[in-house]
Length: 414
Image (cartoon, rainbow, N blue to C red; front, side, top):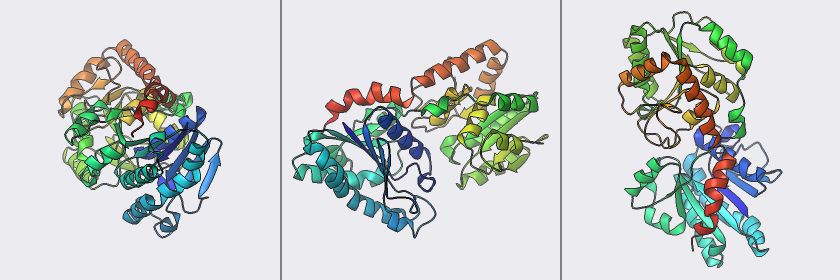
């Protein structure tokens, strides 16, 4: 079985813009580690080789001639890239990789990600049908979010590919569009389970012994309930719990509204930037915060630093009003942290057992639930342990073996 993943985002720094890059990198790496020849077709760094072999994983960097004129990353010059990708990836993929493999008696699975790849799916479906080989290829299209849904011809897409998505919540969202996707959850790479630095965790606890440390990492989007996070800090401060919110947002305009709200609430904010990757750089960025209420991180948070914060915080605010899957909550669990999620796409949570689960946008809900947990250290430890056990069930090899491979044969779309 040969696997192909179509995605604009990918593992290069140039191609990273959000959670999609993490998804396709983890999926492709895990498929190849399980012994499958795996090809990842993405809009890669124009300065790196167009095609690269990493064992059973083959990287195909596309649209490089366009990217050379658009140094701002994968979505810089987006529509020119979409046109080129849809027009040139399918015939090359078919002639250079699929046709020899199918001709030798093999089978293939093509998994396309997000609305950007819909044109490529249509084109590849046409090529396979014209060649009389459509029944030899399982062609899937996956929705990680509802971005770009208004640009999709759903009837044609449903007739060209089997539709999948990442949670029951997204499945029901898509029902309203007249389609019925199959749920195949997201997964975690093995490094998500690496224990955080013991020395770093001890230093974080030593540095903030009498403060309630919260962490939130998300795009500045109203759906991510940033304003609720600020209100939580305000209410905790009123109770005398000395909260410290370590926040990492994006460049979205909503960020200004969030910090304006914090100022109006009387909260003190400090911008900090780590001078490099790793635990030491993050700890240095958090030095001398004094009575600051919100630390706004202005630099990238690398995986080691993320695990330190997720593990060392009293809670990670990963709650949203619209959450297609909730990867941050799952990453928190994998790091042994206490995840506080919403109640939309987080299929992995069991309220009160492996996470704090909020069903409203009322900050008092978190304050009351966490207040109960704060008085029971044994319950908190049990919740963190249960969360880590749950996260193990969502390691990419587990998801692939449990949800993807058993469906490959029945997902062939004639």
